View 1 (cartoon, rainbow, N blue to C red):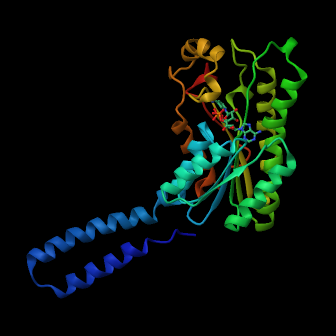
View 2 (view 1 turned 180 degrees about the vertical axis):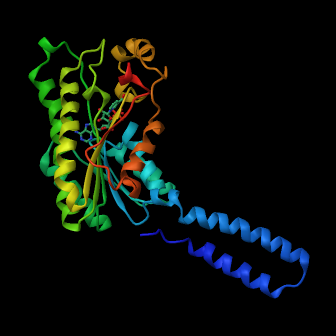
View 3 (view 1 turned 135 degrees about the vertical axis):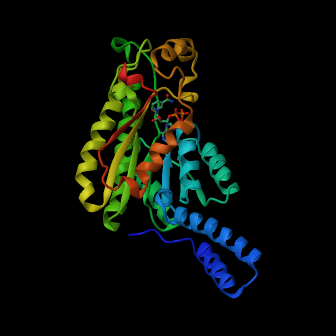
Length: 302
Ligand SMILES: NC(=O)c1ccc[n+]([C@@H]2O[C@H](COP(=O)([O-])OP(=O)(O)OC[C@H]3O[C@@H](n4cnc5c(N)ncnc54)[C@H](O)[C@@H]3O)[C@@H](O)[C@H]2O)c1
């Protein structure tokens, strides 16, 4: 279906046309003709391909949106027109980001959630539905990382990592899809990692890498199971991003090695990832499901 034209531009076009028809002054005619060209170009743009990224009237929930990658995605979805629920384990962080969005005129809601608990993921979706009446986009992004040699990885580290990174993503997908499948439309985007494809080093993180590989395969499974009922499921896999997750003493020490191994010779900025997410939430990705969109500055190519 063709996107709607901007009604304000249509009114302006009609006004210029009407004035042109009724004026005989050549100078005024000349200026109006130029104005008509400008409005016509703007009108083509408003109806054009960029308009397909607009999320006006849609509702999104982003987990782990209290900082880092999730925060940046929440801002991008809001700027594209969506109402955004900012969900995080740390409620004060969620409230801060929700307030940032509101200051930009974006409708938003802060939600406290521990994604490792199935009931809390279901409650999160219910809160979004109560506040905004619908849910079109779920970005399941909350994640954690610990580091240890595999032979010493504790049961607690393994279980918590899987609980948040793998179970949490599944519980969110499930809770979101229950609503989306009924409505026949949904866009789910999970945050995996290039760690699903390569083994990071020198730091050791068996639980994290395994959990992220699970997210990629879960995404392919759900993405093919739900797509014929209108719900696509895709994931993004960032390379090293400059966020709190990577600012521990251990990781700051190995950063130079990461840079040397990254063809672009830099970490990603959170802003580098939002284009991919906007594509996956937009009409332009209608035929895309089960994709693992790796955005890593070329890291996995070497
Ligand atoms: N930073 C990177 O280099 C990088 C690379 C690839 C993938 N990722 C993934 O991107 C996602 C976001 O990472 P980030 O770098 O923004 O991390 P971050 O630590 O800066 O932010 C993560 C947010 O998730 C929240 N969170 C943690 N546990 C939670 C839980 N149980 N329930 C709800 N919220 C919880 C935290 O409170 C925090 O606000 C993670 O899944 C991470 O694995 C990060």
